[in-house]
Image 1 (cartoon, rainbow over the protein chains, first blue to last red):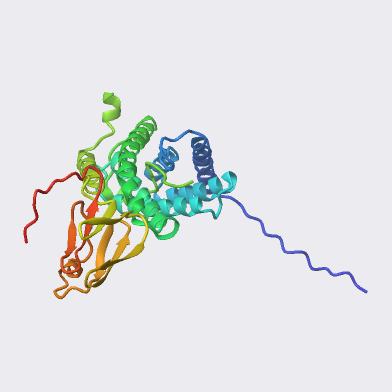
Image 2: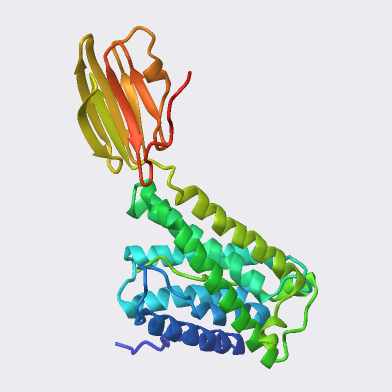
Length: 201
Length: 127
């Protein structure tokens, strides 16, 4: 009998500076999402989506890829912490996040000197409710009556989209990053979800 | 306040204008009182049934020449079949607006839609 000399395989994951940065932003976004869940809402599903301020800032400072990471981490982690993972509300949040990320990917191609955080925030907010209402119609409420809520959700997206965009712009200014950039720079570093409101939960 | 407004860029005004017009359009189209929410069915001038247009439902009404079949669905209603010769009421298809009427004259059956604030907006109908 001879003792085996092979060593067990060791896998070491070394987080990069990018990983730490994304994790920090995601933690802030998750904390805001959970805190916001405790706030009373005048209409189920209508929420300010304050976590999207973080995502907008990440979008404008570090680019679309980072913002997408933060946004999706927020959706998954907030659902796990809140106990809604794989529940209907989770899928609605996910649909809203994917739609707003897609729209932000496009809006970032607009000239940055002309379109700032408010534009990004507003279009993403509308995309967010659009994605959520489609999931609601196809899956949760198989009835056109769900569309009667669209005006309210649209109004909330408009108001919260503007407010979140202004706050993000102000934070960027404090950071000294608010100067208009070219469209190419915007492509390299931007885009994430900014739901002015969330329909879910 | 001015400090906040400095975040705005020229194109943002265009985005906001489009967003505002979208919201106004949503209110105008979805919350105007022209969408029907219930169907009123009469036979021989007598009220036979009145149902909300929330769920799907099929209603059969007996008239002097046979059976008229009416179908209700969320937000709309139609006459599916009628024993009348010319089938005008069937060919009208789905009715969606308040005060819309499908009249199956030979069988004396009428289907009318009503809704919030419908009232009697029309003094008469002309064909």
